[in-house]
Length: 137
View (cartoon, rainbow, N blue to C red):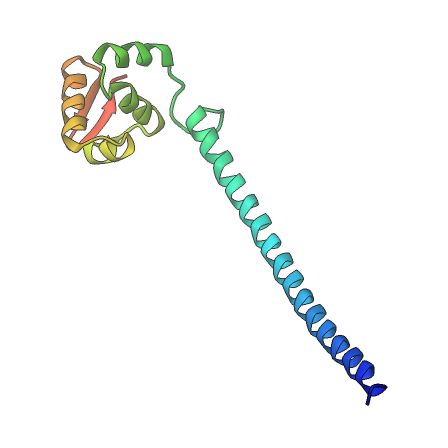
């Protein structure tokens, strides 16, 4: 019996090792698949963020909107104060927006956005056409 005991243990260890190696191989395959998914996501998000960066940075060809003197708008936004600079930034990026879109975009209450747009309209910075708000040319 003592002679067969080491052989049984050796055989059991081999089966356990085979099971472990099989599981290790499966895990390596799963990791490789996840790495590929992550690489694909990086490519997709990289392209998305590049497009967004070019839109919001005013890069050539990014928008059909005319190039504007940003310093003028910065000055006027600071003059009005509050959320006006952020609203101006949004309207430079997207020429027409509603007050609802603006309040969501600049993360303020609807009332704050409405009040700021009213002050900007009184100062001659924006115009409204129905519910659409746009910067005055």
